[in-house]
Image (cartoon, rainbow, N blue to C red):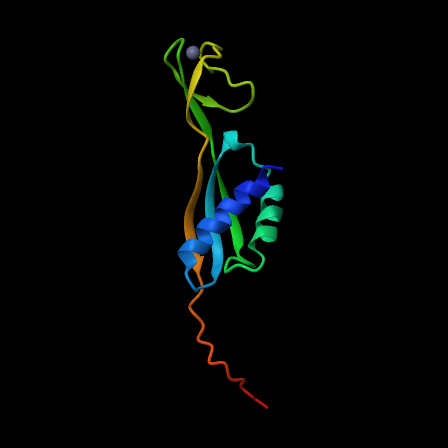
Length: 123
Ligand SMILES: [Zn+2]
């Protein structure tokens, strides 16, 4: 389950940027060729985020379609499925130009909460 290592990377990046604030949302871009199962990544993300400032954050995934350059006919082609083939000539000799991304695109942080250490009694 390679989603776990991807989730670890996402949480590590998010936590590093969050400082002492809590993260409420993480937006990531995941290339199609990473073959990430969204539900598996969400599950792994929740697991890894526990005990970090990222705990409880929403994970928003944006899939990046794959594309490549055909070395046979020079076409810039979309790569939808495996095996990766050129849509124009059916060639298999492709240079992948898109679809291997794994980026933390944006973070949404909650306002820093001031904790005084004292307990309030609203009774
Ligand atoms: Zn081609």
